Length: 195
Image 1: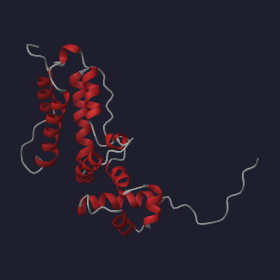
Image 2: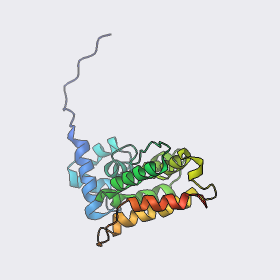
Image 3: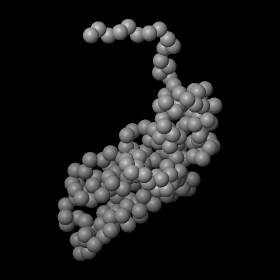
Image 4: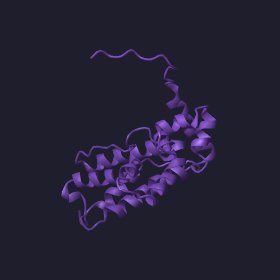
């Protein structure tokens, strides 16, 4: 069967996605997570709200794509070299969350996903969560490099706290320490006693 000819009509506007995403990023930085609504994005971008809803079912999906354009901001394939994998993980996390729009969106997105756990919801949550990546890194590490008595979630929480301090607070202070210091402290925490 031959393809039917395309009916005449308005050409597809390929700039709609980028205009909506750029407006979302600008609103996140200038006005914050709560103020970044579909209506505000429509007004800021000149894109009709119905066109935005055709591309993103809700403001959450729009904000996620604007703040974290990669399918997953953290994508570190573990190699089994704990120190090297932690270094890549920390650098990737810092790169993904250092952008102003990512910092503005992260807390609101995490809060949303924690309070709206519907079946199938964890996939969206993983878009901004690096915990699964951290667990994969520890599982791939040599047995003698990770103390089985150490709770990986506790270590992850401390690690992310340290990273967030550097991303959000230390940009205002003069304390400049290489990320390698965080890698070394994390390795020490994970190391079995006497190792």
